[in-house]
Image (cartoon, rainbow, N blue to C red; front, side):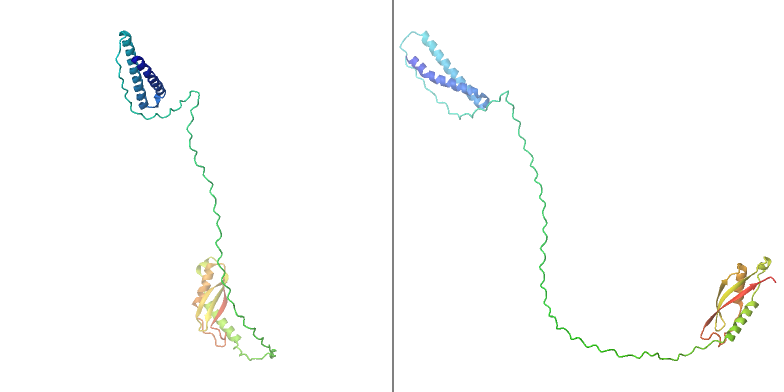
Length: 260
């Protein structure tokens, strides 16, 4: 009777332990710790089942005698933390969700800054100017008549030149140039003829200031001979009554070169 009672009392425990072992086996993929605990429970259940089986075998072999009560002490197992809930198994037909990549931030359009016109400077106060009273308009006197009768003023008369003295001096200067004229030998050989007009300036003391060809004969030999004749001449001072008030006088003399 004690063995039957023991078997009856152990059966719920064994069933509970077996059920717990099956539950723990269902979540055996949760981690190494849970697997070890499940294996320990299964081993414990197998040990208890072996003990019950051995006890049943012994009772069947022995004659029915009054058996002494068997004392069974239950050892309390240390409490283990409850396992975490099992992760749902992924189905083969269910598509694996792709990781959602974070979208780059959309740049916000820059708002142009509106430049505000600087505040206009405060207008300076306009100074108050005292306007003087108008000046009295002077009375305009009528113009005094002016005598516009021309006044004759006697101007001193310039001394007049003596034409005879001027003509005589010019004739003497021409004769002096003719005496100093020489026909170039090369021009004679080439039968060159022509007339040269020489312009020259004489001061009142009879000095030659300058001389130049005023009109050429067309032959350089004759032109140079005419200039030499003027430069060789020694002119006399001008008469006092000829070309009065002039310091210099310009003369023009024609010099002819003929083979006759």
